[in-house]
Image (cartoon, rainbow, N blue to C red):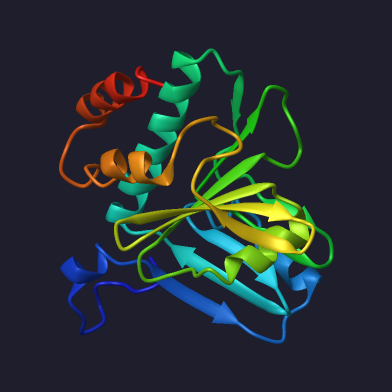
Length: 201
C-alpha cells in the first residue's frame, strides 16, 4: 500500500479509493527499474517523463474483473477466439509504457492487445489515451462514475464510439448495465443475466 495504517487517515475509505504516486522528470531507464516482480499489485506507467504508480482499491479490482469476466462470456457465446493479457506491461520505448487494468487480443495472439480497459476511481484519466495512442492500442474502454466509454484509434487520434469494434454489436450502454452490478452482486449472477441479454443479438 502506498498509504499505510500508521498515517492518521481513514483507512476504510482508502480501501475504496485508488492510491497514486507520481514522479516527474524521470527517464525511460528509471521506468524500467520499476519491474513488476518487485512492485507486484501496482499499475505503473510512463509518459512525458512522468512515472505514475497506482495501487488499485478493492472496488477498482471488482469492476475490472467484472468487465473481464463479461468479455470472456461474450467470446464464449459467439465463439470468438480470445487471448487474455491482463495487466501485461505495454511499451513503445522510449515514449510510453502502461499497465492496463484489463487487456485482450482477439482471433490471434499479439504483442499489443486489440482492447484495453481502464477503471477510474481516484486515479487515471482520459489523458491515458495519449499513452495508448503512443503504444498503438486500437480500442480503449474507460469506466468512470458508473459510465463506460468506448474509444477507437483512428488516424487523427481516438474517437468515441458507441459500438465496440472488437466485440461486434456490444454497446457501452449494454455493458455498463451489467458491470455496475459488480460492486454488489456475484459475477456468477451477472454473467448469466448478461448472456441472456446478448443472446438476442
